[in-house]
Image 1 (cartoon, rainbow, N blue to C red):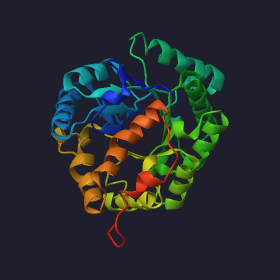
Image 2: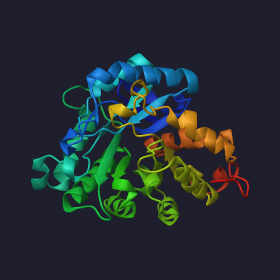
Image 3: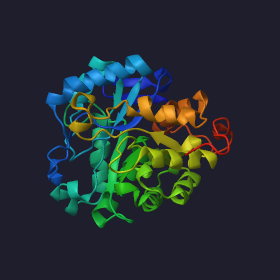
Image 4: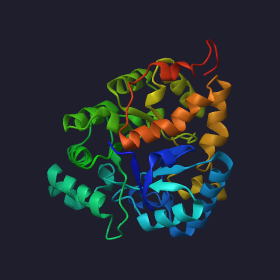
Length: 328
């Protein structure tokens, strides 16, 4: 457990983060291997991204962004460092491997233990000779209800590297599926559940799965807020209110997962600020108070990153519980 956050511009005390955190975003990305030519955030978008983040810092106090572009996804930690310095928003970079379609060919011949050593090397010495060190492992991916064999190895490697270095692990669960299997695999490799965030759970309309993950101690990432083509924010709100009502407000992470240039405000998209401008006002209208919203947007992601855990559920959720009969 460490109260220092490893950001792309150096270590920073968690106590210095006084405003909200975006728990799953991308600043430099290339997913065109999947034949989606629009799934990029290139150097040509850097100025627009910097302007967006600086604006959110000024308007909403945005203090930190967790950037979950990992190996094989077009990661550019030098670009992240420039964006962080120019926008005034701290950025935590990541390492790991995405889900199987984006795995490099050499992964098919490499053990989990050897993969873990690669991750530990980046965490301890920096990415690609840059000296910029990751502060989280993710978004480590799988697709389907259970990870494929290569995905199981990369998830196991993530858990082994996390236990060695003290970092937490954020996953990519394709369309929200397979989160329970991911958590089972990660914890079997020795990683405590409170060091795990299961990704894209707002795309899975299954409150029972969310409760099971939260009860086990994992974080539940509602991290595609605003992506209406995948899931409506109306459904996201209902699912989030159900988790809060069940006493698990301290297990939730929120973000928008900007993963293509068309999502940028400069191109008419929802932007990184959709969470603050659209979704949080709906939470307030449903009866959530500012203490609970601060937990969702600041305290929870900081506890996830540092490993400072509290018991799941309980009184922390009660103060923000919506009144009976409020719309979902």
